[in-house]
Image 1 (cartoon, rainbow, N blue to C red):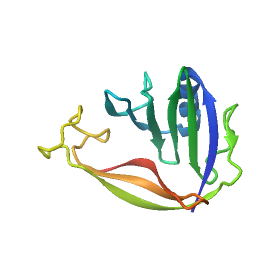
Image 2: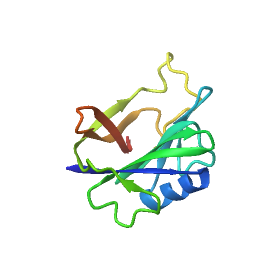
Image 3: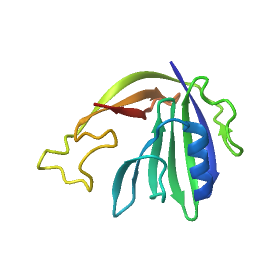
Image 4: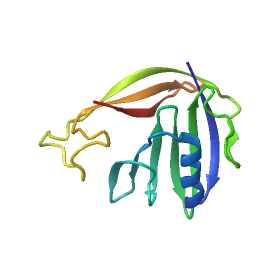
Length: 149
């Protein structure tokens, strides 16, 4: 299995359009800044400083830089046809990947106090389906793909 990578930079509306065009299917997202952590379904109405939107074939990660956003787009092989304007392929991709699962912390645990009662799949526990991606430099990145009950 392989994951292809692109770089993108633009404004908030451009990031919203990028997520809609690239991920197409049911989207989940997480976002954070110094005051908040949010996990929801759909495309964000307002973007926090850092976060990721993800669907079954890929992920778009973003970081705010003033009024602009930098994004890393990670897509399964074949999912990146017709990339939006401004998306630049990274020269060292594709990167090898394998599917795995990551358990989510139970939101019913009294030691956990997030600002939400359940994850976007409607349950207070479960797992994330992820791609474990190996970058050529050696680092490993987990690319979110969906919630599993």
